Image 1 (spheres, helix red, strand yellow):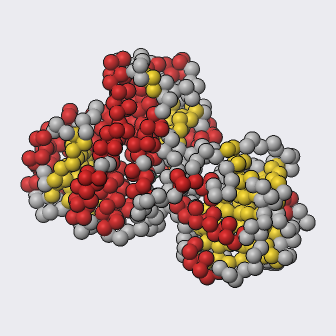
Image 2: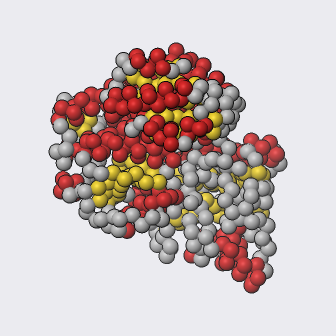
Image 3: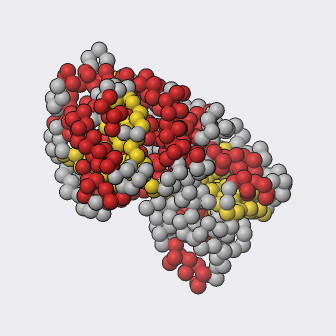
Length: 613
Ligand code: F6R
């Protein structure tokens, strides 16, 4: 959620840092700052608010120096104030530090540094102890001082340090928080995330836990905690720089919704044998016996990824014939799940691959000897590196905080996993597998139909009405309920309209009391097996004056007679319907938020990647 950029080279560092930080704005932040190395001194500027504010306040105030570090902070320890913004400097002002993560023992370290070594602290942050520790240990070599400083620290860090006394040098370290080195010609970069580097280089080193890097314009040296040199493998970034830009759309979120046909096609690419009507996941290396011996599957994730997991449960139970438990990672990690090595498989889902709770859940599972299969969108992410097996979603970088294309590709990944496991276990009838494979292949075009201009207008018109309300309800049964939960989350997180998702059959157990004249109710009715039941719940809403907008499949004409407005999806296999059903809900949320002038891409209080518990 916080962003780091560091630069050493011959360009004006101020501009490189500010531009790099802007590329990380999507991570969410509430203050920003930079430190520049200038002729034996450090110059620091930081402020609560946006990077644009910081830029306005400081542009032209610094000499054009060529080495510096920058940071965007999302407050955890200490409020979002100028003082708490990074970089943090030591007492002598010779050392500056930017840091992502949490230093768990910062209070004890702060007390010792203050009481025994007379250090003066300027902020309430955990990070500031790092600057003082470095000052404490510094004896002419910044790398050595950083190594000693982090050896005192418990918790997680991606950090970069700058010293006034070592011209052109940056030193960085990582544990449990991502950090990437960008390699240039006569210049080098470090960042918490690849988009900050793309304007300059595609050649990177992905730092691993316990690694340190020393950067100068001439080169990068990576070492371990003992100082032994590590030969890093070059990671060539394939992402297109413009893939991280907004293109012609008003918001990243809309751009990403519109990219879904491509994202789904990419995620299916090379994973389907159309002629055989089968899924071929060559990247997974489970042995057939490992799969046949399974008795149960856990799916663990947070937020939207959890909602994808709820759909995955239906697909896996139907196609693999194994029971599936879906857990929120924050609950799972503290509930002592009854894991059995060899008999259980844990599937973790995380777009970013850095979500703290999901990572912890994965580690806990692996410690018990159970294999973990990760579904993630970020190559090189912590989840992807630590899981036993990984199935990447190929959604491309997702910038808007509200997840859309990542969610849809997570659904695709889960269908692929279900068909793959079901095939190996002989649990899925070949005819059904072939039908679903055909259905999956048709989805990109069907998504294109749902995203046609006139369909967007239907949704925009409905959202304009919805935007006037402060409460809304989503109803559905079975798979529709799983998607209703995602639709409700989407609406509340970006439009700030209070929304609740209910299993339609639960209405009369309490929620019906909240249905009053005109209240917007979005009913999902795509599942043939429970259509009648859902429609009788719609009648319950109608009888209390609620205003129902239904999403259903073409062919379910009977729905139209019972609702105020309707959105038809192209005919789709019921099991795959969530991939289409989610899209109008994303768009309703988007248009409602835009109509309410909300900060669509960066909703208040939220961050893209939740790397703290
Ligand atoms: C909501 C949203 C979040 C994330 C959640 C998990 O739109 O994006 O609920 O799904 O924070 O994030 P990842 O998938 O990165 O682990």
